[in-house]
Length: 445
Image (cartoon, rainbow, N blue to C red):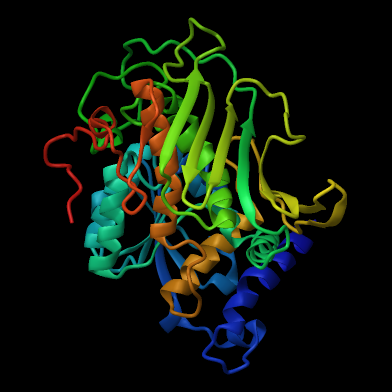
């Protein structure tokens, strides 16, 4: 199984690179034989938590031709675990680092994979690009709308490769069916329903506690205003403990499906957003955000995207834990990480294609062949041998839908949006457009 998966990845990801080599007709296999030290990229991974496993394969693949210089995390145990994990797939030992600022200062580093908590994503990308690095930043690429605007400005100013980790953009099956939708396979597409269902359990109450041994709490907070440590904050539950670090489930997972919906409908910014949301499970636990959301965005051309998000109710309303359904005048498409199904207007299955990879769905951490292809696409785009599957301005637009929904949820009302800029046309919404930063940590262009 492992060998077949590796073969699939090489054919799907590196094959694209082979076709893109200046029209020479050189195959991916020929390219892999001549690729040398002059083409090697020096890489650092920052943030060694649950997403770490998604990056071991693209780093270790010989054809990727990268050198892992640093494994960086603010928790000592994470660094040791990462070193052990990579020790099984590479023949050398990367440096273990606590402070990412030392990596920014190292001129040998070409690219950074940023898998830190949400509040670090955009500021960390800004610091890295300004230090001359290319960045693969996990979703959501920003913590708030203003940070997304900064990322677009950043890329234009410095010209570095910035890719968001919306890995389904690199899925051959998703690329195929979205292209077919654009070419009229279901007539005129007018609506997309994106969804996510998970049975997350009770969350501990955040109470004051000593900083865990080995954790650099100051660096964990980084750009965020300083506060006392609360129990269990650093280990994933920062997602649900208020808006200081996280972006709730809409930023955490909806961005993936909303990206597919927006891509298929060929829409950018909406005209209006409306949300119904609430916390309906474990009412007295430590989860401080909504755990259920229904959101709707209206776009020019009478197009609509809907989001059905259930963080703590695992009922699979649409037959799976996550995915997107696109409706058109002559048919519909169901697409997820496992492939797609094309239906005619009567609901009859016309064609089905299953993915050859193994990308995880609702399991914590995820990772798999799509992520590997997406990371390889990032590496080869740096080399100029491929084009990004998800340029940062595309990632920003999809993340922006999540921000608009979160703001609507927080202010308790819907609002109109400038379709050209994405900016809210509501005073209350604009109060949440940015955030307060720890002095000296403000991301700037």
